[in-house]
Every structure is written in structure tokens, then in C-alpha cells.
Image 1 (tube, rainbow, N blue to C red):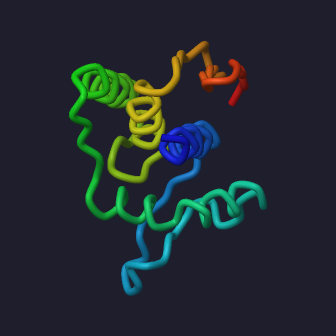
Image 2 (image 1 turned 90 degrees about the vertical axis):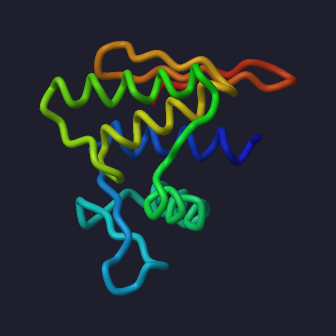
Length: 130
């Protein structure tokens, strides 16, 4: 559960930052990213979740929870209506997948250009702006 939460928040953070991810065409165990340089903390986080990210980029994401399905399709529809690319690995796709994954573990809302994520732990509640 904790890893899924961190992965969801990472995907949202990457998407909000406008970063696009893809598998490398000749080495499927490598992740390509655009822009070419990323902040060190994001590189470390991507490396920590590399296998899961590669799986998402290779196989896509298909939530089974009805609320998660609705949230993902709603976010992709909004991105599409705005003319944003919504293919696998695009920033809009990562936000949609991250919010869909997080919908089971935390409340996520989009307030303008700032995504506010409330993570609920068993011990306390932490709110972070991403």
C-alpha cells in the first residue's frame, strides 16, 4: 500500500512537472524521459520505482475499482478536451494514472494548476502541495 501511494504521488509530480516517460526502443529495461535533464530528487524517485514504472509504460494501467476507473477516464477526457497528449507516458496520462491509483489511499483534488494531495496514514494526516 505504501509503495502504491508513493508511486501515485511520483506519477502526479512527474505529470504536473510536464515530464514525459517512455521505454527505450532498443533496451526495454531503460526509461527515456523528456526533458533530457530532471531534478536529482525525481531521478532518484524514478529509479526507486523503475520496475513498476516500466511495467506501467509497457502494459498500461487498467484500474478495477469503479471510482478509480471513473477518475482516470475523467482526467484523460479533460486532457483530451484541452488538446493535451494523453498517450501512455504523457504528463496528462501520468496525472490520470497517479490520481486513479491514489484514489484508493488518499483524497486528491486539482485546484487550478496546483495538485493538492492529502495522504492519510494510520498515525496522522499529512497534506502536501505538489
